Image (tube, rainbow, N blue to C red; front, side, top):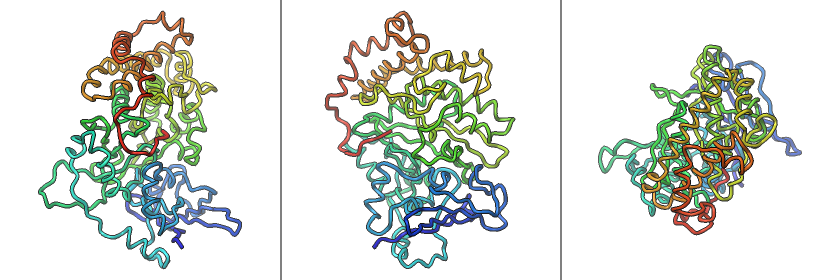
Length: 471
């Protein structure tokens, strides 16, 4: 019989603030109850949507702030395989396993006074001292084609229990040092400072894809976390952007939290509603900047054809309710660059439809939802186009640096060029009349490497990893 976690102690920046309890009736109905401890200060609230109060917060699915960073995909599979024989791997079990190290400042753990005998052995297994061999930046960056899967297996072994991070892409939170002090040095895996992501056999060179899209976002004027890519183009290492200089954590709340939606409803909303829910918590002095960033990111997602820009990929960060800001941009990929997703549509509705927006629709959204002037909207769109063109014209160099990436990179250019033209015309015959700064590079790459989607159907050397990625 496996153990079950029924109650967890919730902390904000390592200070205990309350308890999360899961209750089940005889009929199997679940109820989640979060109750603040007495005398908790308002600034210690677990979420802007859950201010400190005496009354408990009761829901019939785990409160979004606690579900927000639950592991998914390969990371979840690893934890289930490793601990499933000892522990019920429901949402409370997963939160217990990864709750001590999560994105944001809210953590979860068993109360030290917990007397549940069924959990005793699991607690010993999870809480035992866990030393690891130091992993340096060079270990990650210099990973070659034959070693990168082994690297990620090592990351899972060392850091899965410290990886409260959502998303289906293979990723962990990892502690990586600049260099190992000596050959016998060891670390305790307790304070991950990087998000490390890998590609997948069904979505090869996803790390390159994301790094190029982040470069577009950066050039377009968005704040983007620092990142590095491995020499084989399959591993991406991103600095944690929820950590203050003094080591404390910034609060981090994504769109699902702000709209009180479970992760499973991440695609069930609109960009208009998202802007409204984010700006509702941003102080007036930060609101214009946040609205501008939201609009820039929307345009970037549209022009790089990111069909996975769902609620969880937009967030706010803050130290207190008076300094709430739109979070740095993250998880931007060109989903339509992959043959299985070449007809991908936007993740969220805009202007009452899920189709890629025209120039007119983007401007309307910018004016009515982001409260920007029409002139400002058009200037931003032109700036994003320039950023897309600038990064797109580096694709030949990227391909030369990362052999095997030519079909993904070519497909990205094809999609980006089509996206720019689609701002003005939807019909193919009309698009041909539009000339862009990507025409020459698209023609050159297609002539050299062939139609990219046909080429993707052919076997390519990527990884032996068998887990698919539902992005």
